[in-house]
Image (cartoon, rainbow, N blue to C red; front, top):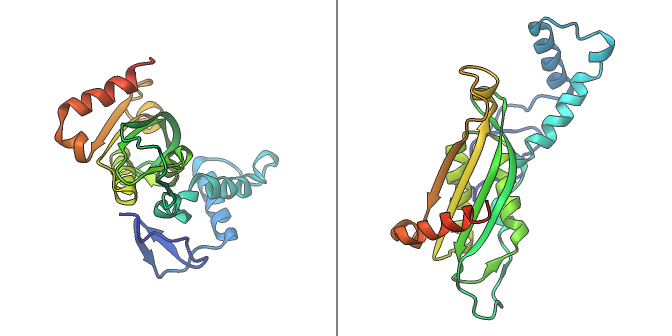
Length: 212
């Protein structure tokens, strides 16, 4: 669950939902680690083209992994109840995301498709996209990310059901290892009526694929 996730204290680091007591590395320590990796790869960190690379890398990491400092329940906390009695499926399709494999620290890139049946109101559509980013902008596995997004929406909105389809290409499979470019991994997660009624799963999948 993400309910316990809070913005990091500057001197703490987090693994999953556990805040560790160890001191968070300084900016300079992080940049020195980049220099070490450059040397390990066979490069010279002092050459002109690489002099500013450690600073750029740490700045990029701050953006790529900002999800550790964000809180899904807060993003989903505002629910609109005045929806004129609407209680059918809400679907947001083709939400792009960029994440990083926790095993090889290389990207996986794809799209998420989210649907839910409202019970106590609806949430702003952009909030669903933001929740995807909260969990994508961390070191992840696709399976874990799928479960976390679904659980966050289910817990915050208490809908009659949530359906989630995530599809992605993993660079750890495309760029290294078996090097199979274009292979796509699909994960799904269902709660409520989507889990209990196969016909609802079919309807969801049909709507996701409908415009393709």
